[in-house]
Image (cartoon, rainbow, N blue to C red; front, side, top):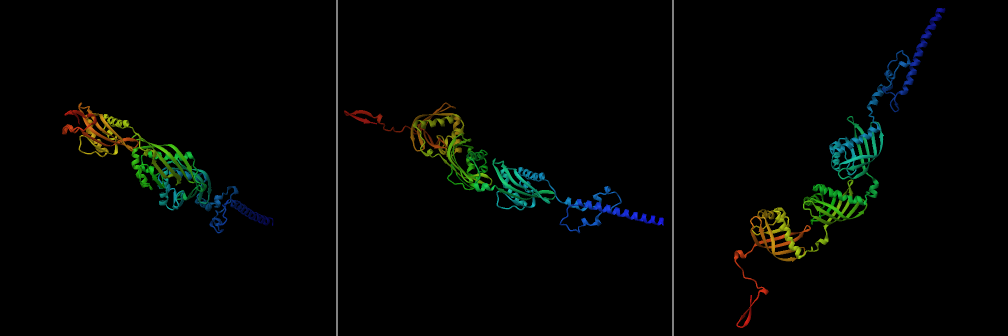
Length: 492
């Protein structure tokens, strides 16, 4: 009987040990479930939660059993790897990638920062850009300003496979030096393993739209320097780009109003040949809502001729596409300059010395520059009228080989409204031969581009040397009194 009791007790102990092992195992199973990712909203029939997925428990101590062996995270781990994670620092770095793309100046590189089917709502275009081509098209123009951005205030949010960055940024336009603030929103997603811009919305600061773009009087005057610097490039396209889309130019030396890019560029094609550089002598500034005006007097130094020319100016600027542009430009000559230019008879005679001094240089260009733009030269020893710069220069190429120097022997001066005339007899000494040659001359001078120039020059040989003496004119002082039959008779 004692043996029977011992067998029953041994069997009970064996069953108790199995029960204890089961309880311990279930206890660990319950505690391990606390580390399972939250599956709220996921069907309870998900394979990740079925007992059949668990690895069978071996008879080891609880400290030797790992959650990996339990299979609690096997499916969940694969799901976690599929979710694209990113840090706030990495989100902000995505802006720098885009900004670096701007710095290349290549619109293709910038457009590649966007996903295949993006939505770009740009700052200065009403047209949504929803594909590579339209995004690139926008940056074709924007990159001409050489923009570089800086985030002033940003707010980052990170979601399940997406991130956003929104706030205020500021661009410095390398082409103009302008600084422009705007509001921004970037939404990023991962495409082809790379974080890219899925949505980009950029807008002007709304208070500037309502109140007008702020600008000081000194900054208004500084806008002239942008235009003047464009002149210094000698590139008419760069100058024309300083004007607004609907800019109007009423130029100093053209009767034709210029009302579009092409006609404005056309005017500067010729004007830039003078290599002009301007300086404001007197300025009067007015500031309005998104417009400003600068009017006064400026002076240009023409690098090609060293001449200085004053004019009156009016610039009206408007804020367009993120920068100040010239909406209206009116330039005119100083009106008092249309009053006859004062000159004395002695000063008229001295104009000959400017021409004679040019002869002394033996440079045909220097001599030809003494003639007006539409001058006519009827030279002493050529039958061909010389009616432009090239023909006048050509005549003096030959004449200067004689090394001539002239002297006025007899002068008769007439002064008119912005013109004057000197006519008489001059004599040349030919340095190359020592010969002396007299001739008759007529110089008609006009006041052109700030100085007196020869508009007409007629030179001819002394005719009596070829035609013989001509009858002398009756001169009052040369009357001769002779007695005839006791009376005085007067003869010329």
